[in-house]
Amino acid sequence: MNKVINHRLDVWKQEPLYWEMMSGIDKRLHAGTLPVSIIDIIKIRVSQINKCAFCIDYHTTDALKNGETIRRIFALSAWEESPLFTDAERAVLEAVEEVTLIFNHGLADDAYQKLQSYFNTKEIADILICISHMNFLNRIGISTKTVAL
Image 1 (cartoon, helix red, strand yellow):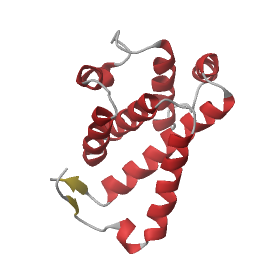
Image 2 (cartoon, rainbow, N blue to C red):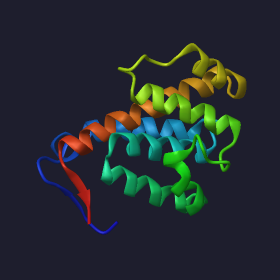
Image 3 (cartoon, rainbow, N blue to C red):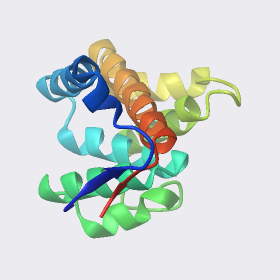
């Protein structure tokens, strides 16, 4: 990514404390026990659902640096049909879909129980924070028409 352009407003420049707070959430997520691969697929999939081109580009680049494969990134938008994701990752991706599209029916009990099969309560909290954090950032990026050139 060479250059970032905010066609409307650079929120983080206007109020750097907001960026410091957002960065703090990300740092905390990475200090926890969730594998970075889970954090990366959450960020990419949330951004795909929200159609945030900047975040898709940014987090795909990060995921590749962190060892994610191109093949899995390509398959992420069709994760339900792809054999490339573990059952634990599928549970996370189901939660990503339901929390990002929360207006449909919220996070179903079945989806939450799947998370409980693979993750402890702290990790589930981190998953929910990561999903919500990425949705927040997507909304800022889309609202300000942020793009990467």
